[in-house]
Picture 1 (cartoon, rainbow, N blue to C red):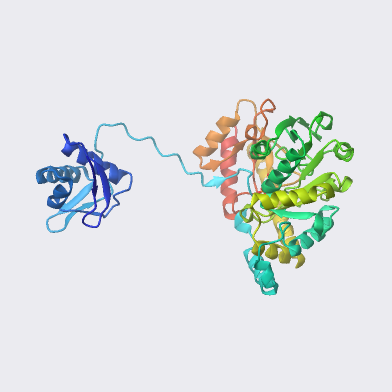
Picture 2: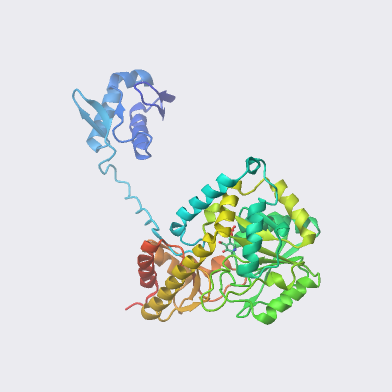
Length: 463
Ligand SMILES: Cc1ncc(COP(=O)(O)O)c(C=O)c1O
């Protein structure tokens, strides 16, 4: 017998058995309180009214109320009626529920940087200024390549800061690198490419994006000098993080840079350069874009996900001439574009020098964190080897014998700390020794010390 009890200001769906109305009502009320459909403080209808609603004897309801009052689910006082208390006495002999998993308050996974450090004021000032200056047509459907202001600003910035060979007409904005990659894969597939070669360590999500566009992903080995370039046969394109391999952290060795650029220049396939954190180089001059070695065969891709915040969903691709029109058409067909407001704000931030200031500021802050991470681990967990720390917002921590990735991730979770193992970022069959990918850029500044302490407690050798 399904009933909706809707009188007395409370809507509640109850599923009662005809034969066992009392047990059914008792269980239904307990369930409704336990799962929050009846919140603490909710007044229940008088027993006479509920009995009439449900078509059961008044005594049945009165007995149920009395039982639930005795168990602590309900409260009752003469003259004040019956209400939900929201806390029940231990009721039955059923086993105690498993303790809720500890919330992961601290996060050292490498997905993003410190979003609490987003330059809100400079961003708002840039947005205000850009919008005052923008003509009405900036509010119309945008140019599918992106606003002219941002494409011009990016062309200047990328040539200056990253050594990219670029003019504004070769820049297309997209909703983050992921969107740009999906567009490229679609175009390459339509042109007959079947295989995307990708470093055997990277984001599985990007491999999935390529597969969704119909490409087969072929993992290519990576050694201490980066991707092994003589393993690209048969690929129509290769996806590469040459300035700072994600997640292992090495820079592609100069001879290999020349070799992959020559592979692309010879027309074997298109190279997609993912320059996701190129601004964050600590130990020497930034490594310039590989794109400049063969601009008509290499796609350069960038994003604000590390330098500002991934929530903006703002990235760009710099395209060889032979790909430009098709990628623009694919972008228009994808239906996705960056908001003109955000594009104009970023353009203003770049041209006013605010973006450079933010990058300099963030680089210093992340470098300090990297130094603290290295020094603290050296002191407290010397058996852990830290790799890939010359750049970026993450490092790889190689675990000592006897500590598996799964155990380290579990131990960290028990301390409220989220960590990722390296195997989450490797293609099947390419697992290295156990290691963690530590996104030291991620916590807010005030949480970094505690996150570090919990990491050390996780990794420190047993006493
Ligand atoms: C290797 C790599 N590429 C690209 C990106 C950026 O992707 P998106 O711009 O889609 O956020 C990230 C994450 O920030 C990354 O780790």
